[in-house]
Image 1 (tube, rainbow, N blue to C red):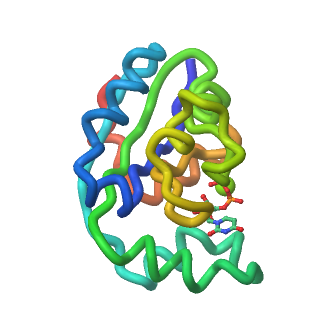
Image 2 (cartoon, rainbow, N blue to C red):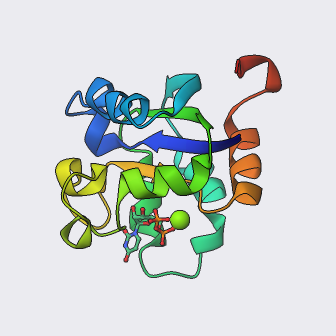
Image 3 (cartoon, rainbow, N blue to C red):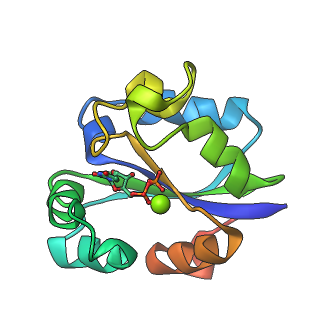
Length: 138
Ligand code: UDP
Ligand code: MG
């Protein structure tokens, strides 16, 4: 069993898609073991996405991620990191498989509905960015 960090991004929370997205996780056998809705400051978004700071899309991404509420959550289950990446689909909704979150709910390569950790190591770092151990109930 494994944990991964998921974020329902501003484009999705603003279209009231939190419940629809959560149903996809639960239908796929992932358990939502922590969840909260919050607003990132631009400085916090910059810290969270620090690995991308040299990329051309970094400033716009951080502006967007701090533009409206997000829902951060810990998903728990068998092979949760890889399973969530499959549920999410490719980064660009136009390239994502039909039936994935990004294909069905994403608007463009930036406003792509969800974030998911890319490795178990990064998952633990990203979970620690948002949650204390007391807030995670498996
Ligand atoms: N992103 C973007 N333009 C790009 C690539 C990525 O705006 O050309 C945004 C998009 O919101 C993506 C996030 O930056 O989800 C992080 O990019 P990454 O390459 O880590 O993709 P992910 O792991 O989210 O699929
Ligand atoms: Mg990534």
